[in-house]
Image 1 (cartoon, one colour):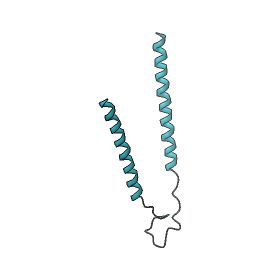
Image 2 (cartoon, helix red, strand yellow):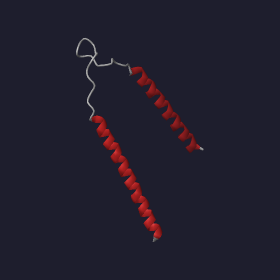
Image 3 (tube, helix red, strand yellow):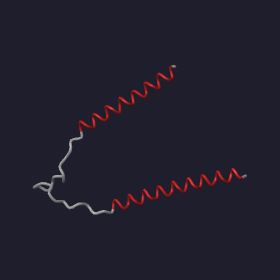
Image 4 (cartoon, one colour):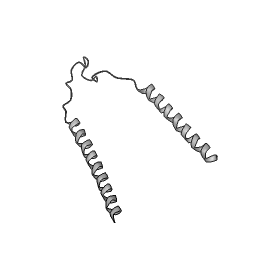
Length: 85
């Protein structure tokens, strides 16, 4: 009977810790969204340009996708070899 009570206490403690952690994460994310946006100063002569310029992400994105596909292929190949053995 004592083991049953300690097991439920551990489960309740885990649920409490997870609940508090999620509460803090949600609470702090809400605080981050309440900050005012920065002033729109120095973003070019016309009003349709984005502040800070732009960054090309096309080639970097292709590199990351290629590396991810290669890593996934390696993992699949390793799992396939392990099944064959």
